[in-house]
Length: 182
Length: 182
DNA sequence: GTAACTCGTCTAGGATTTTAAACGCCATGA
DNA sequence: TCATGGCGTTTAAAATCCTAGACGAGTTAC
Image (cartoon, rainbow over all chains, first blue to last red; front, side, top):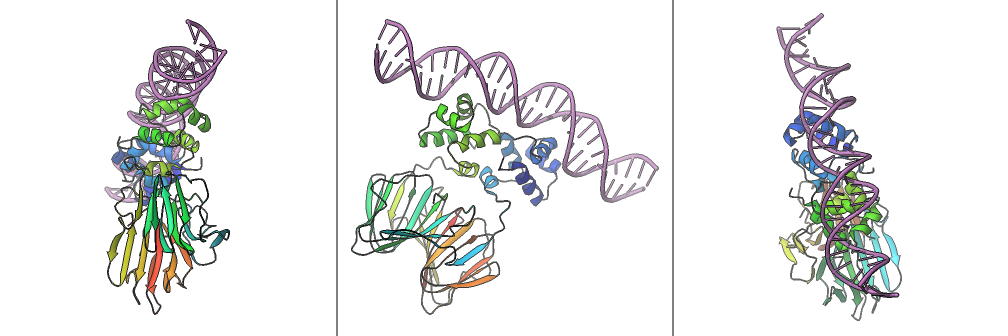
């Protein structure tokens, strides 16, 4: 399994400077279980993994969000800025090639009259943005609203949505969404 | 258990419009197991929960980060735009009050010479941004770089970082980070 | 040297999960 | 009316997890 619960748990436990027995005592499980989990000899039930993590303490969400390998790196400037789209709708995607990034950050530019398409978009996650210049019509789940410079939006991406430039000039937006569906 | 794996799974499954059998088929488990998990009659092993979520697909991290109470809603305009900071460094936080949001989206404005402070910042997560106007000096993990309009950055927030306006005019940035540490 | 402690690992068996197959219910249609 | 096929649930049996206790290795103290 690509999750490697064992390595994650061992990493967490040693980070907190605990022995298997000490963690087991705090968590109310046996030291043998900790050992078996860390060796990936068993795949713990959610309830027992939660008990174990309560001994640290750490939430399941944090536990599975841990990134073991990632040597943290930074990117600046325009090197990893990928240009997408066409004349109507151009997108500049920040840190496009970064493996396993948790965030999609976009610099969007809608030409006069441009839109995200005839169909409404719907996907998993959450997204938000800020309008830099121009005017954009945003439709989300039945509601429609026109936004100008300095205004912002935020919604659950499962709601059907659509963007359309209704102004007389190009419209620029900086937007972000997570998890990265782009 | 306060996690309520059952309700989470049922919520995920119905959001994607799948029946128990259809999800089971995609995940390579039996429909009975889905039923038992959703009723909290069993606490699934991590490996089987992962198999189930692979059928959606959704990661374990996302699954445990889900906020059940939050009915998907949209926000427009300036209503939930909270103003923070001072004259030196002003921040406008998008969808500030939204409970359980997964994204922090900021409109930042640095006055001439303003910085995020003497100390370097470091926290969990990832962040990125796009410069709208002005010039900002960004230091991340030893490296320093000055960015101008249209340029962008992206880095793991664990790396010590600091922003400073080194231009002759105010500097505006739209930035995003996840998970929300703000 | 050896006794007393800690460490992580292993094993048998009881407890729990998971499967495979049935169940009851509600539609749809011949 | 009676089949057909979908839905979620239930149930015995197989598979897996989890515990209690023992094991060998390493450290410290006498």
